[in-house]
Length: 84
Image (cartoon, rainbow, N blue to C red):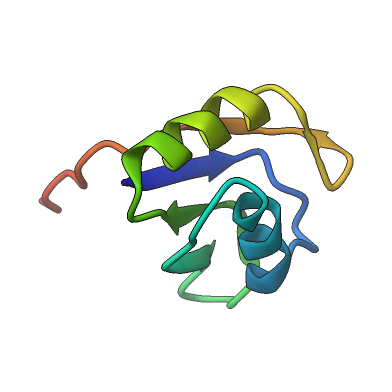
């Protein structure tokens, strides 16, 4: 399952994001989205967890809770909209 993680501190690394979710199960990928122009983090990212039950547990436990000093928004990622 692909999980959206929003309202992250700009200082959050991919490794930190991975370790937060690894407490709930296997993480196949964790990535922080960066601005194309500046390369600076945008404050959100995505985590892939192959086991849906573990992913749902992580979403329930982490949504609205503190990650790096900020109240995180965690939910199942929606499919990407095609660019116009």
